[in-house]
Length: 75
Image 1 (spheres, rainbow, N blue to C red):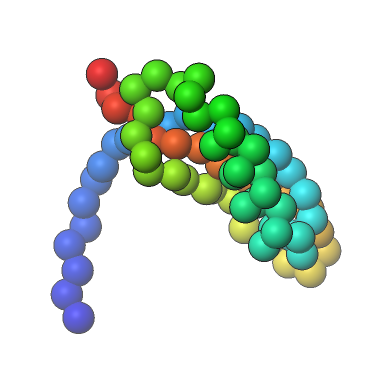
Image 2 (cartoon, one colour):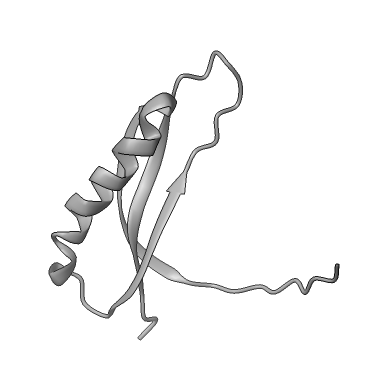
């Protein structure tokens, strides 16, 4: 399998939240819906949603941070 590595910059507008890793599956989508309900406040927004989250490092790492948002045009 071949791959091509590319470098791409993008800008996002996000909201941050945190919670238990065990609940990320339900918490992140709920928080994304809250964020999207305010999307009309964001100028130059695209329709591309993004979610970034802190990975779980080990069994003792129970909570983490995550971000939900929209990619915005650079202009």
